[in-house]
Length: 229
Length: 189
Image (tube, rainbow over all chains, first blue to last red; front, side, top):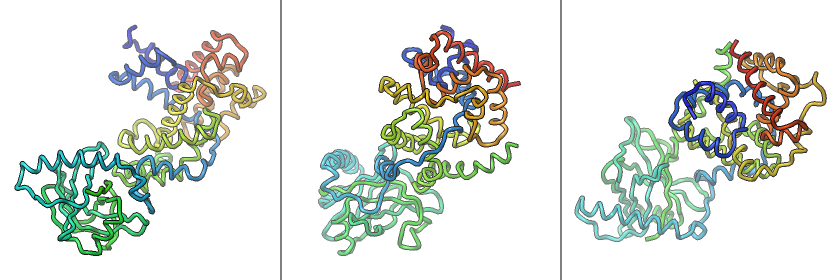
């Protein structure tokens, strides 16, 4: 079949957009769409021609609670996160596996820190690329944050690390963290205690120097599960 | 004029831009404003509210994950989102083997010829493209209009349309083909 033939492409595109292209023919056309700009243009043209038809549909209010399901599916931080027991130890195992790799890499890069962390977290981006390894030490209370994939904050901004208590109370700032290299932050007894009752960390984008209000003022960019070491 | 519709859409475009910057509140705003229209599209194709609810969740996850693929040149944000919803519903229908009742789809057809254009475009917003489409739909025969409507709005396949309209498969395919060809020629005049 000659897929560069404009009329054929147009016919396939309109059937595809209409939804009447099925089975093998559809699978083949979807493969073509990936690489063919003319095919994608043909589809776009049909979508634009037929779109006003679609707006004739009567709106129907979806069931309450649908939005919460979407938040859950996307892992948006909410008030009142579930306590660690229901998060499953599979998450913990995953964190340890990645942490072991990262710590191994850091070991060769600088003199090793032989203290053992009480809690660990890996902050990753949407593509699961690890960005920061967070180690929380109990005595003395200290937070060590190592940037794994250099991502400096945009000019005029700083990244700030927060802990989100399980009881749903307001996020507590752990401090500003750098997008490259190592950040060490002191932790008070109070904050250490709260960390013991939090299973989630979050990183927000703040004005340079951190939030001026003590609460996140910028968007929450990443979150991470805290696991006990 | 396009300028008017562009400013009407500004709210949505800003929300998509904020989704790209990963502002979760922007997705929630999109949900509050558009979920009813998207849910309507899903219910029309899937007929069952439980299936439509799951599909709506999938749709918003996709909107979030692919927010950076929206381009204004492709049309309005609402059109883009409704397209995601339509394709998702069609996929679900396909994977479930089209178990949705065809009888229910037949009920959504208008009773007589004079009403058909009006029914199809009852709630269409009054912009240049819709007016043009409305005029062009008048150039189709009733059967061509019904066939296109059953496919696009209800997500029926050719064989299902053939059952609903009580016509041979070849005839239905011909109605769809000619109906769309007329629409295209008319819209591009």
